[in-house]
Image (cartoon, rainbow, N blue to C red; front, top):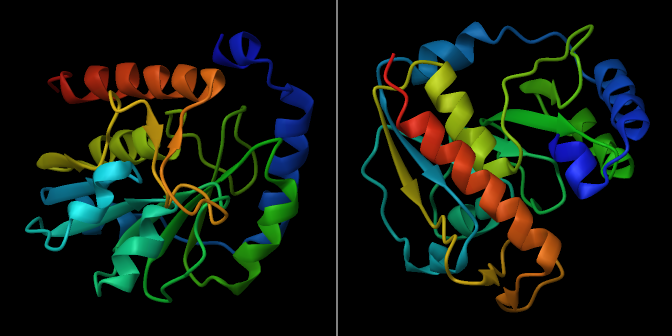
Length: 203
């Protein structure tokens, strides 16, 4: 439904998925589950309020794509990075990367060759090494992932759905926060709905 609503091409998603499946090495996701299960988890978005963060108390930090750039710059290294590779510019060696393949990031997938710990994910039916955890944007996929892996508590940072702005760290070519386009507003609304459903779901 989301794909048809926003006009995404399923064929391109499968092409990207096939490339990612070919490029990654086998990685046991049990390390990720052991890291998150039963822990307090901070999910860091790339919204305008990201620059107000200078300390995170939670045990585990999951960064959403471009938020990684800011966090590393202030000396905070995420444990997990959920990314489609279009915002992130720095790649901490020790982090676990949960990478999404989709039709618009085929040319970016080469970046995974330099990463040690990669869990490849898709938004089509999974095959090979690929996983499908759910979610849509990097931010809400991070929330879905934390919930799926058994986080005891999830706290959100810099998920600024009502600001009308896209944070400067969302894309490497942004010099400042920019007004959200119509399609970006649709994406953020979908992300908000997914996050609310996940956080309100009691197991």
